[in-house]
Length: 73
Image (cartoon, rainbow, N blue to C red; front, side, top):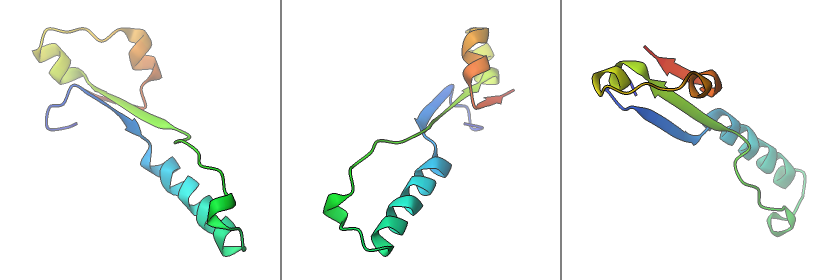
């Protein structure tokens, strides 16, 4: 993002590793891997680079900035 990307949206690695730890804990306690239901990511991360938006002549709506996990200025 700091190198100039405008928007980043993806899985939150912190929550992904937390979910993985829960899965591993269940297996370590004897659960069969095939019996544990699959789940999608529990959280996503979105970041906006305002400097890049300004350079492109774009305005990121305040509503999106308020929902962002990270705003790079």
